Amino acid sequence: MPGVEEYVRLAQERGGRWVVHGDTVHLVVDPSDLRPIADKIFNEYGACFRTCVGTDERPLNNHFSITHLFTDDRSGLYIALKSYLDPENPVAPSIADVVPAADWCELEAWDMLGIRFEGRRLERLVLPYWWPEGVHPLRKEFDYKSRPDVSLARSERVTLRKEVGTVPLGPYHPALHEPEYFELYVKGERVVDVRYRGFHVHRGIEKLAESRMNYQQVNFLAERICGICGFEHSTCYALAVEKAAGVDVPERAQFIRSIVLEVERLHSHLLLLGVAFHLLGYDAGFMHMWRVRERTMVLAEMLTGSRKTYGINLVGGVRRDINEEKKSKVLSELGELVKDFKRVVEIAVSAPNVKRRLTGTGLLPKEDARRLGVEGPVARGSGIDKDARRDLPYAAYKYASFRVPVYTEGDNMARVLVRVEEVFESVSIIEQLLDKLPKGPIMAEKVEIPPGRVGVQVVEAPRGGDVHYVLTGDGRPYRWRVRAPTYANIPALKVMLRDQRLADAPITIASIDPCFSCTDRVVVVRDDGVVERLEVGASW
Image (cartoon, rainbow, N blue to C red; front, top):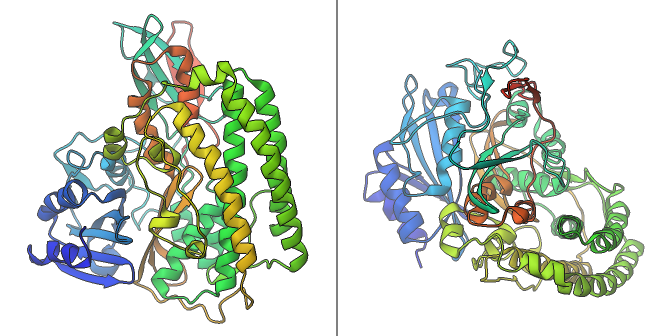
C-alpha cells in the first residue's frame, strides 16, 4: 500500500515539487509528466480518481493550471497532481485514455477555461453548441454578468443512428422530472447502445462564488446545488475552506454536522426507494416509503428549523444547537422510523414483480465501475468497498461505528439493497452521535482565511462522494470547483443499459439516483421531424 513517501517520490524522480499539508499530498510536475504519473497513481497504486480542476492563475503567477484530484482511500490521503500551463496557449496531455474517469472533467476544463488537451477529441460538454468560440466563462477576464446574444439555435437532428430503432427518453425523466435526454438504440426489445445529452442548464455557481460572494455566503449558495442533498455540499465546502485555512472547528459543531448529514441521507434514500417502487408499478411501496420518509422531514425541521435547505452551516461551525429535548424527540422518532421502515421494505423488496425486475438488470461489472470512477451505492453495488465517511473521515464520523454495505452482483437489486441497509446504518450513526454529543461551543472563536491556500474535501453524500476544491483568495474563493456524484455515475449508464430490456431502462437510470439540473431548453419540433432547440437554459 503506497504511503506519503511513494507519492512524494513520483515528483522527486521527475524533478517536480511537492508539499504535504495535513491529509493532502500536493505534487507539482511538468505537463509532460502528468500522464505517466496519473497512470501510475490510478492503475498501479489503485487510487480513486475524483475530478480535475482547471484554474486561471494568470493574475497570480501568469499561468493556467490543471490539477488532477485522486484519493487513496486505504491510506486516507488526498493526492493533488498539478501542472502549470502556458498563459497564451494552455495545453496539457489528456489522461483520459489511462484514467477514463477523467473524460468529462477534461472537456469541462476545455469549455470553461480553454485548456486544450492533447491526444483526445475535444467537443462541447457544458456549454451549448452556439456558444462563441474563444469565450471561456471561468477565465478571470470574463465578467459574471456577461451574456452572449441568444438566438434560435441551429437545427439539430436528434437521432444519429438509422440502422437500429431509436427510443427517446427525455428531455424530462418520466419519474424525476429533471432535464436530461437519453437516446436508446434498440433491436426488438433489447437496448444495443445509448447516447446521453445532458448539461442542459449551467447555473454558473462557481463563477458566482468567485466573483461576488464572501466565504460565508458561499455556504448558502453551495446548499442550493442540490434540492435533495444540499447540506452535503455546504458541509463539503465548509470543510474544504476550514482545511485550507486551518480553522479549528469545535467538536460539538462537527457532531451536529454528521447528525444532520445522516438525516439528509435518510430522506434521500427513502425518496429514491419510493421512486424505484413507483417505476416498477408497485405504488403501494411508493406511497408507504414516502409516508415513512415524512418522519425524516419532521426530524430535519426539528433539528434545523427547515424541512429542506437547512442553512445551518458556516465556515467555522454551525448556527443551530441540539438541546436535550430535541435529542429525546429525535431518538423516539428514529425508533418508530426503524420499525415502520423494516416492516414496509421487507414486503416491498420481496414482492414478485419488484424482485423480478430488479434482479439481474442494469448490470455494472466491478472493473467497469472502477474504470469509470463511479460513486456511492452505484460503486458499492458493484463490489467496490469505498465510503468517504470511513476512508477519509471528516466531521464526527470517527466517533461512530458503522458497517459499509457492499454487494458484488452489480445489478439494480444490489443498488437498492445497499440503500436499504444504509438506512439502518444511518439511524445507528445518529443514535451513537447523539449519545456522545460533547458539550461546548458550536462556532469557532476565530475564522481567518489567508489567500493562496488549497483545501480539498470529499463528503459521502447519499449518491456518492461530493468533491469540493477551494483555492482561497481575498475575501472569497479564488477558485471553487464542485463535482457532484451524479457527474461520475452517468457515464456508467452506457454500460448498464447495453443489452438490457427496453422496459428496464427507466429503473436502471433511476438506480443511480441521478440528480440533474432544474430547468430545460425549449424544444421545437418542426413538421418535417427536425428538432430545434432554444437553449435559454444556459447561464451567463
